[in-house]
Length: 217
Length: 217
DNA sequence: CGTATAATTAGACGAGCGTACAGTCAAACG
DNA sequence: CGTTTGACTGTACGCTCGTCTAATTATACG
Image (cartoon, rainbow over all chains, first blue to last red; front, side, top):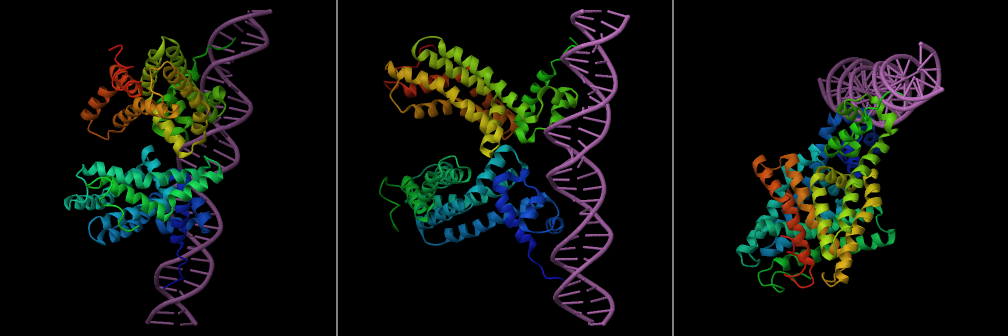
């Protein structure tokens, strides 16, 4: 056809992932995005049309990556093993994109339309997988019968919330650097995430303190 | 002296109190503030100099009102009565300025420097009063001996959090108007606030389920 | 009355923003 | 080869933003 593409759209989205956590959607500047990506301003309009469309694709890309992994984990293994794996996927995802996700939540709280619309459109899809796994576990008698929404809130909060706190500490130096770094490392490692998934499963287990957990440690 | 003042600064601050909850500090526009106040744009610079100074005075005014009432309540009556009164003052304040306070918290979460600086500078002063009352109650044996920070988090959360939720519902029509309106009314009345103050005191009472509460119902 | 003075007005400045568009370049194809 | 085509560039438009200044108004005082 014509000139070879440098995949400028990919570069811009990468810059977006880097800048969005600092500013939120409203604070993003297409000029700064282009500058960060080392790309001409005009390319922005060429590839994305409008800033809204860029933000939409930025968020969607983030989410689709996660969702593919989540479904993969959710379909593997029987019983609560799939749930454990799915929780680990969620945990690692929350860790790897904690700054971006935290800003997304803040945007939504603040009433930013893009963020609110995105969460409305996608969160159900994603929580639905976890909910289904929990209900499977309850049906098999491995998990206590609690209200699904309650169980959902519990596992989501127990897995993800610590990572947002860790990201807060790391990003904004609310604590002394050393302390924040150590804390973040302690609660953000793959092992720590897996451990929290076990905690959560134990908390939901049919027979308290025994049951579902401790299978693959 | 000269021309009579229309107290334009007061009008602008009033407009600020109305617009700040919708936009946060970053989203405030001095032009829209002036328009809302029915005032010439130039008056903004004449009375406040910069937007930052305006926001500073807006937040400080809000806080000073509350603090005066809080100290008054805290100094009246012995024992836990003063604590109960102070909690009611906090509750009514959180209700009457819930939208503004919620946005202030969101701004702080988002890293907005003005909001963060304001909270850093003032929250200790204000929580200090409650903390002192709690420690008094513990010293007199009327309140259980918990870590002060823990007790503080408990009472602050139990009094204020429901009001932020109510404000959210009211402001953004997250639920059907009827439902949200009824809910907000149920948890935002003076009586409901006083009841939650009693709940909180009972939760901290030295002898569970009896003690500190139920005095003035 | 006339003047000093504080309050108020209208307008302009430069900067940043999102967006748009005419032109340039290099590879692909007949 | 020449032309087509898609990727890329430079620049400009119109808007809103925070800030600032010179001129105007209306009051109070000597």
